[in-house]
Image (tube, rainbow, N blue to C red; front, side, top):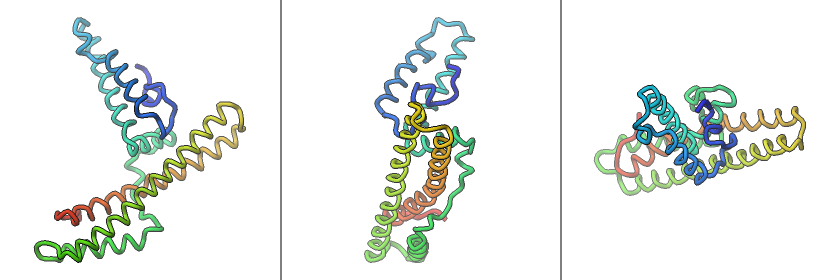
Length: 204
């Protein structure tokens, strides 16, 4: 198992739209091959190597199984950026929702005891709007992912020249990086509003 590219490890293309069943099947096939418990008779050095390989395999599967970690990993592979370095940027089209969220969370924090029904309803309504924005980001990511795969296929079949392919690739990566930086902010808004709506407290 020399590959460190998780997509390559499972013999999959670098894509955000990988088939979950295919990924799971290949994970199980490789698990049977590398799991140290299936090689109890092997010498210690080989068992130690198999344990390391099994750890890499498990991490690769966990990473590619979840859409968000798959997005982070693909961007990391392509531009070498640590997912944590992307930061969190306020989506420009959501400034009104951001202001409403801050105001409602402050109002909820100032409330004594259980939230009044009217305030809880406003929090729930705003959470639904933020959820819609969250879902819209993922719809856009899937659209870009389709364009990414089409560009890769076009280049593989020599339907576009290298310059056009490279320019499209960079443009798509730029769009994905922007969405990647917006998702954590939207996710925090969702988490905080949900905590208040469900009767808990939100993060500071």
